[in-house]
Image (cartoon, rainbow, N blue to C red; front, side, top):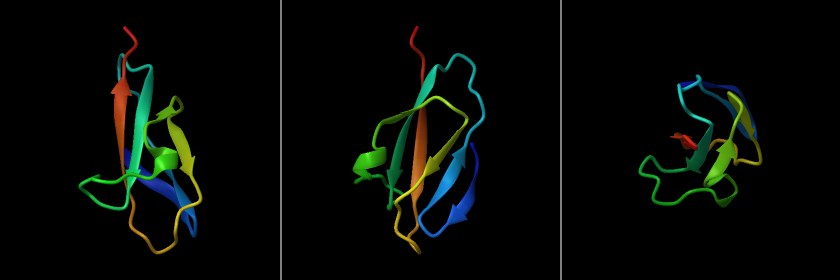
Length: 73
């Protein structure tokens, strides 16, 4: 996974590389590294593009994100 870019007061852009065989990716975003709670608007959101802008976030808050590759085969 590539580092986040375009970080501003209410969001950032996630960037990923293409994974062979993946048709989409499930996104999870949390304020804790353990992901015990996730942000509902980004919990399980399906990502198809290699970039995704996350907005509506609190400034000066640390966010963590995970992408899970999905293969429809």
